[in-house]
Image (cartoon, rainbow over all chains, first blue to last red; front, side, top):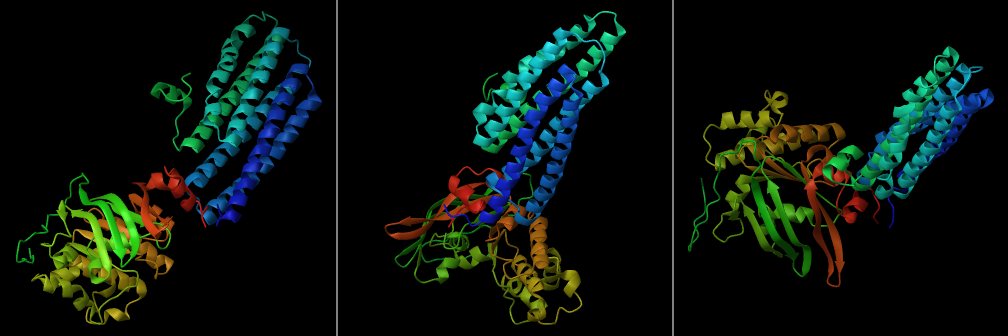
Length: 230
Length: 279
């Protein structure tokens, strides 16, 4: 099919590629941030902050190019939907990067405090659950696969469950104020990972919109009897 | 209301009071419309319902038959000797191609504005009063003022109504043509690329005018400008060209709400056209 808007479509591909680049960085940042906080690795925590600065740079650059493309090209149809989704993903991934920084900062503020290996293992588990969620969301985006995107709410359930139970784990740490301070910081880490999981689900909802042209939250889809039925 | 009485029978195109309710009744029911010019089929098998007090845009590549369909809605194709119209065009339920229907009355109820502004070589006042006078309207001064106001031209010309309509700018001339069409109290205005000869500001003024008037009138617009269709229309019909052993012919591909057509069309052909993936 000849493309009379090939210049625009090339620019759109470049914009999409920038989003995918950010998603790769986010994926690595989640791993680094979780490792930094669990292992108390301050150098790794600093690398997370530096990586987030790079994500912010790409985010701002993509935002400028997005505005320019909208103004110049006035996309329609699937191009318009893709532009909308790229804007959403750009913001969502930038926020995921910010959550990674929040996690990494916890490594810094908990330096020298006692820790609960049980909570550490749950934080690691959350990281191991959240990273595949982000990869699934991005893979669904690349493949324009609504069915794959609809897997995300089920993937998010164990993350939510661990996060909901985290306060019990904190209480179980007992009266040691130092340990309690550390554990309370881990609640924030848990919350940040839970948010990243939610952001992956948001990306999944955007993928369904990109493919179908209809936007619904997955919870609403389940209510309407659409989608994966979870 | 005037109508022509044929020897065998008479069909009246009723001058209905304009519908100001919230409902959007069907103005045109187009069924199986096929138009040929000699041995060439311009457009084939078009089925389309056009609703009152909406702006319906007809879009598609050159040669897809969208202007041909537009011209069928007020029998302008009658003026082309080789044109043959098949199928039905019902206007408020009346077949406008019924031999008993007076085409002049059809064109009074269903006005047309053309690509190039074409004011008569007469004064601004006479341009507007001309059709109204023929239609037997007595209060010409009132009609001229009302029509020019509706066409958003009154304030610019009220002090020079005796000057030639040809002396106006292109955008003003097109609004004068709209005022001229409004003066005969039409129900529908057909617009065939009404802004293609105008600059961007004049174009936006015409679009604003359509949006202001659509509470009172039904508009059908042919445009090559997809952004224009997206800006002004409520519904959009996308026409394309089908290559057959008998030659190229236009056909209706998709008809839906404009926001649907331009964000998530149902047909791949529409999607390819609006995203520029076509040759």
